[in-house]
Image (tube, rainbow, N blue to C red):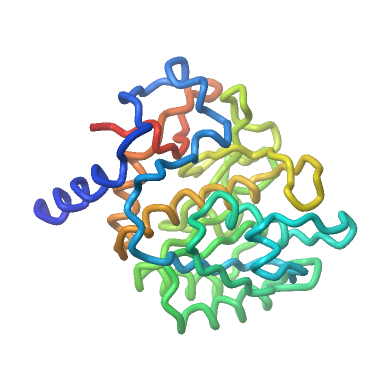
Length: 272
C-alpha cells in the first residue's frame, strides 16, 4: 500500500509542473482562485498519453462533438441541458477526451432513462460518468448499478442539487459518488446549492458558449468537476481509489458559514 501511494504521489508531482503555487489552506489566502474558472486551467506541459473516456447521462442533445469542440453557437431555444454540459466538458476538459452522451429523457431526465443509460455504460470501460442532475427520492436499482460501476473503478460525479438543503440529493448522496456543490466568486456557497454531504465545490455560474447567456446550478459545477478530474486520466489509467487520493491534493479549503468547510478542486493548490 505504501509503495502504491508513493507511486501515485510521484506521478501527480510530474503532472503538476509550472503554474502551481505554494500550498495554502484557507480561503483568505487563495481568494483569487476560489469560485473562478481560472481554478481549473492547466499547464501546457502536462503529460498527455491517454484519451480520457467520459460518459454523460443527461437529456437528449442537439450537439455533434464537432460543435462542442469548437463552441459554435446554436439558437437558445434549441439548446438542451445536455448541450450545455457537453460544451462545458469539451471546453474545460482534455481536448483528447472521448465523450459519449446517453439520453435519459428528451427534456426531463427519468429514472427509467437513467437506469437504461447506466446499464449500457456498465458494459463499457469509461473512466468517468457525469450525472449533472438529481432526484429527490432514491432508486434502488440505480443505486445498485452505480455501486457496480464504482467497484469496476469508474469515478461517478453527480450534482449535489439546487434546493439549499443540508444534504445532497440522489445519486450524489450515495457513498463513493462525488457530490459536487456550487460556489460563488465570493468564495461562499451559492444560495441555491445543497451544502450537506458535499465532497467538493466548483464555480456554479458561467456564460454559455452556446446560448451566450449566464447559466447557473450545481449541474454546471458537476460538469466542471468532471472536466477537472478527466485531466488526471490524460497521463494513465488510475483506480478510483487513486483518484480520490489525488483530489485531496488538488483542492483548497473554502470556509462556509457557521464554521463549515468545503473543498474546491484546483491544480493551483498543489500541496507538496
